[in-house]
Amino acid sequence: MAETADIAQRLATEPWPGDADAAQPAPVRQDWTRAQVRVLFDLPFPELIYRAQTVHRQNFDAAAVQISTLLSIKTGGCPEDCAYCPQSARYDTGVRAEKLMSRDAVLDEARAAQAAGASRFCMGAAWREPKDRDLDAVCSMVEGVKALGLETCATLGMLSATQARRLKDSGLDYYNHNLDTAPEFYGEIITTRTYQDRLATLGHVRAAGIHVCCGGIVGMGETREGRVGMIATLASLPAHPESVPINMLVRVAGTPLADVQKLEPLEFVRTVAAARITMPRSVVRLSAGREDMSAETQALCFLAGANSIFYGPKLLTTPNPGPDRDRELMERLGLRSMQSN
Ligand code: SAM
Ligand code: DTB
Ligand code: SF4
Image (cartoon, rainbow, N blue to C red; front, side):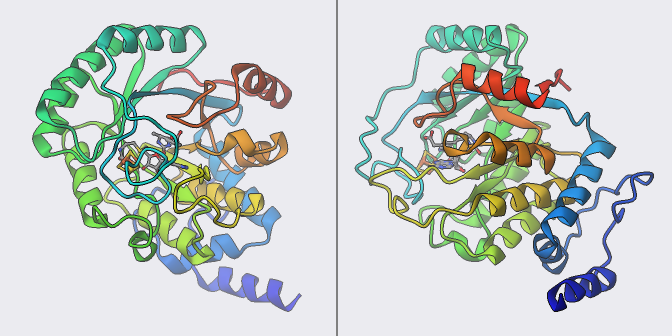
């Protein structure tokens, strides 16, 4: 009880916008402090979920879920050392390095994703950054996918300002580039590019007029403070990302994080709720990690304000729930596909 009183006191002293007043939509603000985000994480679970659901309903249809499909257009052999990633050439994970897919093969996959109900098609490449010749090929794929009537998204690593503008001119709607974790934990996960490099790419994407898809991974052995720091950093970017993927680490054998301790599912739900509350108008994606998540945990994530998923049996290289399992989940929860915004 002493703890509850402490939280009540902290809530009273830390200003909390909107304060779960359903009649008064929470304002969008970029000045979230770590202390405020920490208070959210520390709330009693029902209080946190109530607040997240209130903010969610102020901004979205609570039964609508945005459906994206991922395709790895260039798999494996990546020079970077991201400790979570099965595609790094430095780790023996059994992922074979492949060449960039052909435009025709990518368009076939995009048509199949569209037929299965996806509204956005996300093309991922295991690059540190695209070479200009590769970018020509990706721009041509983006044009083709866009022409099918799908929203387009790509995640290709670091971009220059010029590359971002070229992608925009080809019809790219979203660019995914994650901060991955809190700035103070980042160096334990990646040494081959800096946090600042990531922020610079996000700046180029934003300046080019492409929607930003930016989130991170939890369950990498970070503390709760690490999760607080990640959400606080995302929520204090100059503009909130339009799309915020929250990934649960997929522990892949051969990577340095293969044996890291599993994160408690309710802590993942808390992270989703904190993203929803701090970035009220952003679409929050319950991203990697669903393969090993119960229907109940996923239901709690939707209740906490997640409103997007990756649909299809594979993420980039690891399994995702198959279409049957996801259709059943959506039906059981009474969720439906969000129309493109
Ligand atoms: N190479 C590009 C890059 O790193 O920006 C694009 C592809 S990379 C695979 C995209 C994102 O996938 C990473 O930033 C990371 O957040 C996520 N990711 C990669 N491996 C993961 C894993 N094992 N579990 C959860 N998320 C992962
Ligand atoms: C994101 O945040 N998660 C997706 C997407 N952006 C590109 C990737 C998840 C990858 C999981 C590991 C794999 O399948 O290789
Ligand atoms: Fe390469 Fe991206 Fe994987 Fe890092 S996350 S190793 S940059 S593919």
